Structures are given as structure tokens and as C-alpha cells.
Image 1 (cartoon, rainbow, N blue to C red):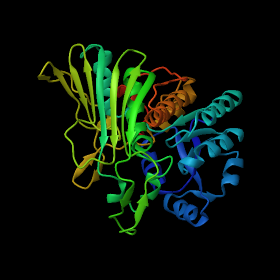
Image 2 (cartoon, rainbow, N blue to C red):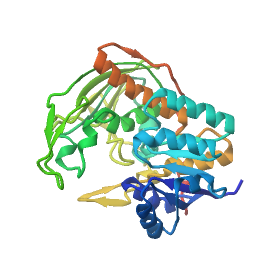
Image 3 (tube, one colour):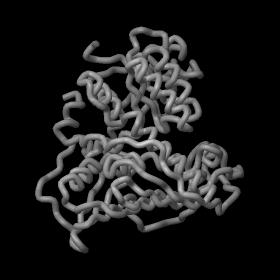
Image 4 (cartoon, rainbow, N blue to C red):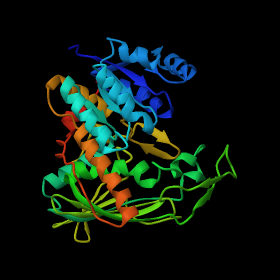
Length: 378
């Protein structure tokens, strides 16, 4: 196997720019080709990033492509990933891995049969802030985590997104859109979920778009926009998840974890960096050892904020794991378990019953600063 693997992108929408812009930060792979149903868009992307524009069929048939990076729309994720596995390619896909468990299990079987890897976003849990939280838990600083809360709440996509309608249709909503970041981080911190119980509502059956270019258009809402869930983890913790697009403002931290010795307040798991606060009782603890994690360093400016953005870190870590013949961190089994948790929340919210998980996984290993540095081109 070559030391540098060739990757081809299928799907040249907005998210592809994040992958293609940030890929040079990492070693072990390079993007060489791209494909899209819209060949004009594929040609534009190829020209911008010095790639070869191809049809999807041609990219899948190209023996020089080792990994397919699947950045298509969510409803096409499973189909494209299965085609890539059938063509003998490793796969790294944007979230969600799939939209039902049957699709994910097909991927598991095909990947195992063909000796291939499947990785899935989100990879933000590899960020410096979330790996610091992992270290504090593993070191026993806050004791055993017994409960916690997660909040992803705001006013709704119709306020700012240029094309928000699909967010309010089947397969949309705040849990399936933003929930993957929270669930992936909880799995890496606490392990697998045993069962979920939820309640859901749709306070506003119609939403009026206030962003351009569809200002004034009315959306008929077809999915719950407020959901409150209780997740029972195998290790015993009870974590609440509140997800809503019906909230004007709130004062909650994105993630709070309560341990037998202290508490952790974590930043938004949609990002790699941010402040982690540790308390003992009501007293804030100051860390005696500086945490200089490569994936916690701000490298982009968004408005008035400096952010750490290292998307494609999960892909780079998968490539290194292929070479070392070890389990990769953004693995199929963890992604599939995350999908089942999210679907379980939706089902429980609809039926009012507790949903027991049928999948499980192990926590990924921690990514300390030294291990993270090995992924970077330096």
C-alpha cells in the first residue's frame, strides 16, 4: 500500500470546501479527483483545487482512487458509500452515516467482506477542548460521571439559511441536524447508550422565511422542532438532551457533565476548540498542566470569533489507522450506534415509549496532543 492514499470527493456542495481547504494540513492522503451530478460544479471545484473532474461512475472505477469521501446529500449517503465499497474503495462520509439501521448493517457486512474501512463525521470530538474533557474524566479529576445536560437550541434555520425548507421536512429537525455532534462527543466521553426516552412537539406548524432569497415564503413544518430526551448510558449516567428551533434565547452551556467529585462545562461540540471549565463544588479549578493540543489552536476567523477548525482530522486518523492496522476513531460501529440513538430519540418522541438500543460500541481511544501532532503536515 502506498504511504499516501489518493482520495476522491463525490459531492461538490458547500461542505466540500471545508474538506478541500483543510486537507493540506494533514498527511497520509491527498485529494486527486472530484465528482458531482452537476458536472459544471465538479469542473469548478476541480479548477479551484487542482483536481480531476470525473463522473461518479468514472471515479468509482478509477483504480488510482483509494478512498471515496462521500459529501453528497444525506439521502444519498448510504447508496454512494455502498457503491464505493463494492468498487473496492475505503469510505469516509459526512454525517449522517445512513438514515436507517438496515443501510448501516449492509455497510458493515460489505466492508468486512472486502477488508475495507468506513469512517464517518463528525470528527469534532477529536478537538482539543473535547480531548481535554476526556483526559479530565479518564484521570478521575471529576470522579464518575453520573448525570449531565446538553443544549442545542435557537430560533430556527429560517432566520438565516438561504434555503431552509428541507430542515423542516422528514429527515430534518434539530436532533438529526445538530444532534450528531453531541452524541458523538458523549460516546467518546462516556461510551455507548443503553436506551432513550423523549418527548417532542411542533409549536409552530408554519415558519416564515426571513432570509434571502426566499424572504416571506411560508414553510409547512413536517418534523418536530422541539425535543427533550433522557439518555441512559451503559456506564450508568443519565444525560438530558434538549434540542429546539423554538427558543429565542437561553443561558445553558452546550454540554455539562456532573461527576462524583466535580463538574465539567464543555463548549459547543460542533467546533474543535473552546473553553473547558472544571469545578469542585462551586469552586472553579485551574488546571496546573497547560493543555496545548494541536486541534485546539484557533486557525480561522468567523465574524468576530477566532475558531479552531480541523475538519478532515477524522479522515487523516483513519488513513493512519489503516497503515497501522488499528481501529480508527470515527468508525462505522460508533457512527451506526450514534445514528440509532438519534433515530431512537425521534421514535420515542413520536410514540412516548422508551427505545432500547440494539447496537453498541466501545469508546474510541483518546487523542492526546502527541498523537494529534502525528496527523499534521509539519
